[in-house]
Length: 313
Ligand SMILES: COc1ccc(S(=O)(=O)N2Cc3cc(C#N)ccc3N(Cc3cncn3C)C[C@H]2Cc2ccccc2)cc1
Ligand SMILES: [Zn+2]
Image 1 (tube, rainbow, N blue to C red):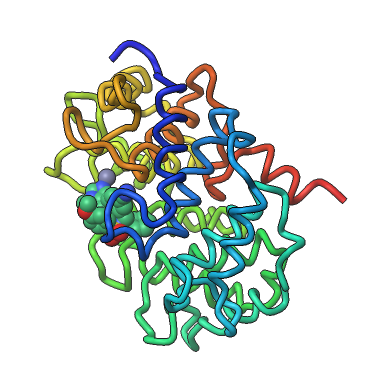
Image 2: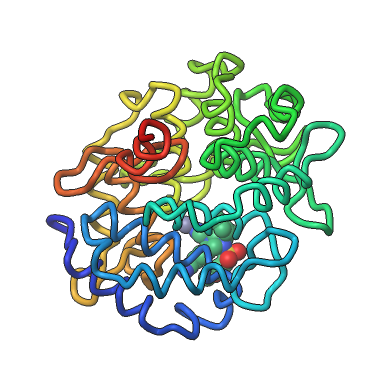
């Protein structure tokens, strides 16, 4: 409980990064590119990104690039939009976007847009508003949003808005905090937040806070640290954070730490993992917890990294 055991979490992440083969378990080996983004962004938010060998990581990232321009979750795996964004985000962390063939990567992402403005995750065609966010976020970081039909992309996202003010995976899909983050962040990046009913959605989001102070993803569900990101970043983007208790949420996240071995779990006394460690620290960042760098709620990158992308030469 108490306070953030930052040094323990840094040690935990470095230990997971070191175990080159996979992180946590073989299950997640195919997600290693995501794991790199979760671990390295946490290190940067805690001011310790210089604890890793960026050249070794960048070399590995480029080995995961497919001839199509997309990135896979690990060397030799199939490319997917999910891993392509993580690769772009990690290179942005290291200020190494210049190692990319931007035209090739942006063409891969733009090629996944469908006639109705939606995006597929890969060549198998699954459509989900998650992929709309990933495409818009990735192309925005590469300054290539002009390669897609932004108006159609926004229209598709709006077509997934529900009467409760939330958003689902596809039109008519049930509102879920993960999808709400993706749709609100995509609208924020494309300057289309005026399509969101901030009071209606703010109400649905603030109702996610349960007695323990934690946030859940849907009504009646258990609280989970990763919703500290999905719900809180959405509340931040629509300027309704004051509708929840920040103090109680901070206590919930700190209560999910393993202060002995480092790492943060989804809820108190569960096993820690790199995913919840990241979303816990990123949540604390949005709650302006001392000692944690500011994170951008839409790009899910440290603010200084986003500033460097858009305001440097
Ligand atoms: C431990 O069982 C699992 C179950 C699923 C997955 S997963 O499909 O690969 N994935 C990524 C993920 C990674 C880790 C870690 N390390 C842990 C969990 C977790 N979940 C599951 C989860 C989180 N909160 C509650 N639940 C049940 C999200 C999921 C989907 C997702 C992928 C990428 C980006 C955002 C979300 C991995 C492990
Ligand atoms: Zn979770």
